[in-house]
Length: 370
Image (cartoon, rainbow, N blue to C red; front, side, top):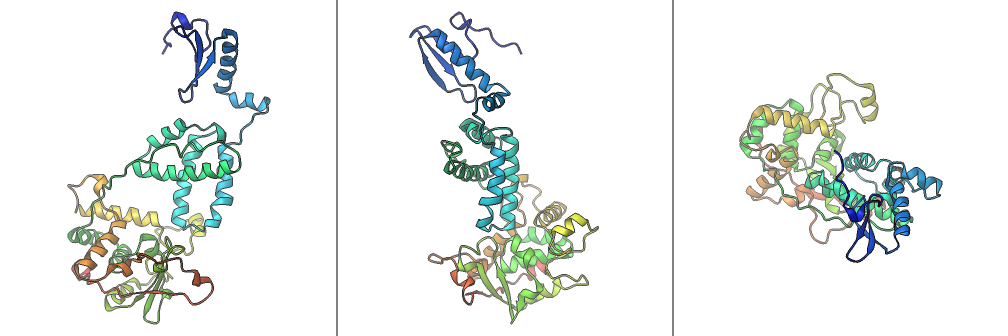
């Protein structure tokens, strides 16, 4: 498209430079974010400054900066530093690190070739606007942390991500119904049925369900360390009494596949690369569980009238479990590992005997599991 011709007052001026006839001054509009800068009344100086700035903002401006000795530290290089030096000491769970990896790849693409100090508020805002509310808030949180570390090293003057505003997240997923989860279970393979049953009885998250091992069942208890909150609260260290209800599920998990994990499967075909990355070839990945649950839910057609964004996933089985415990007049807080007020980090785990939260998983799921 041919650009609109400049008016008489601005003819002969370089792009982004404008003459204010009323005041007799010149001003420059920064092309990256539209911010205005006053350049005074000297026409020659204003034109000279505008030309230099336009060169910097044009593609290849980073090369000009290199010649002038103003090369910026690339944002992608700082992400490498962030991943290799800043994240590891935090000892984050694998699921959290996987989520970080997704967002960091997105940042690399969005700010490719940009220096840390070249990323503006508008650039960050445009990236966040392209995401859903939840993803945008996650990305914003990560970017704020990244730029805080960059600013601490003097790589940028301020934090452009912190100047953006968090989006309002509206929870759209609905809760599972007893009839719905029963229908999904009927359409599930045996290993997924066991995962659903364990989630109902123990009210644990996907990560912890898939990490449960047969060796964790000892002395009449199932020992679980919640990966998400183990570093934050005593409530994450749970010792479940092996009730008849729980024992029935554990028994169903035992089959002709030799696996250390309660929830396991024999892959249709083993891939060498995937096998090397797994702790055991029978271990089920979180994304595979999510996808298999979705397939079973779609096959069951139990929530056919609900929109896609309203369809509950495996994570919502935990909410149904807590609802059923409450309905049965039982305390679901200890079962779920929810920290009560005043609970603090379990400092003793590295120095003395671990303090385990006692839980009795005795929910009757016969209405669902038969």
